[in-house]
Image (cartoon, rainbow, N blue to C red; front, top):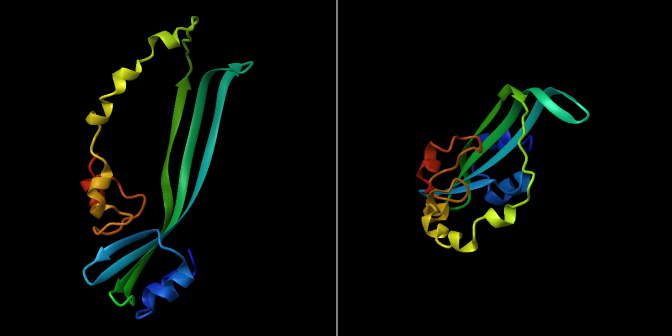
Length: 170
């Protein structure tokens, strides 16, 4: 994200064209009463991994892994009125651990010795009605889309069970 982002959030009455020239196209857009909101995001993720496995000649018997991710993000939200003038905005920057974990995995594998895959796979007619049983597409609830809807904007790491994403038909 541009270093000018925090400065733009503090300014008002800038025309939309000037903001877009400085920041480029927004990641998200939403209609608002009397205007609209545009949002920009920047993420930098660093991942540290360490692992080793026990085995001989390319055969793994045991794998031990540890990993941790650090994230740095910036989020800029700008509000515009119907005349395409900046009316306000907010800027947020954060940095910290995004997650981590470890694992110990013993490996045991069972492999088929006879190739009968083409005789036991599902026949095409078994899938004819599958489309009728799938959930309704999310696009039916387009007004609530966090990318181009009318229900507001949200950052990419927002859990799917809250905000406008909770209204998506799945």
